[in-house]
Image (spheres, rainbow, N blue to C red):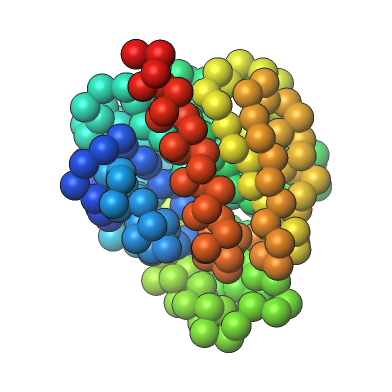
Amino acid sequence: MTAYGIAGLHLEQAGAGGPLVLCLHGIGSSSAAFSPQLQALAGNFRVLAWDAPGYAKSADPERELSLDDYADAAAAVIRAHDGGGGAHVLGVSWGGVIALRLATRHPDLVASLTIADSTPGSGTTPEKAAGMRARIAELAELGPRAFAERRGPRLLSAGAPNELLRRVVDTMADSIRLPGYGYAAESMATTDLRGELARVTAPTLVLCGDQDRVTGPEASQVLAGGLHRTAYVIVKDAGHLANQEQPEHFNAWLLSHLHIVTNSRTSKG
């Protein structure tokens, strides 16, 4: 097993006590995407949101990273900050793919999962893999700002406010760069989680915006159907970034899931 450490990894933190929650962002984002969740959870949880290796304020990796490497990096964060019992892991899109691999690779470190607007990976079909790899050349040609302006509108529903769209575009433009984005895209292009979902033992909440035009409800249904201990929720009037577009509804489901799991673990203990 190749372990990837956490040197140079930037973490945003909120909350002073309680169980640990680790937030893993999507392929075009950063820890900034979880501002609504850090605020909502800080009263009862210790919350960490990372900038993935090669993103935003985190250092560039010294070598190409695989999905296992990203999962190992997340595991290293949990080990460094967990007081025992593992972490509740929230993953959005690509972050959800990392979270699921983390749950099979390091099951002892994952108390629960919340997987939002995610997918089994882009390696499920040659077309999806090619489309993911094409983004690398697109970013190299356009640069982060123009790339973000082109992709940003697809991440939200048609009715999303312009202020949120500007924030999403700005976050992407400030967060992505090569080679980090390229490593992330290649990790997605080579991944198909469908065969390992049944090995996930952590209780899992799967959420998806009803207007997600990127991965779509169908991909989230595949995840929910392949997991044993799962609940599936559609977030109304939300696109691919349901946690940002409908934070009140998203956070209500997230908090309910976290409280059910933590109360169950307490009663068993």
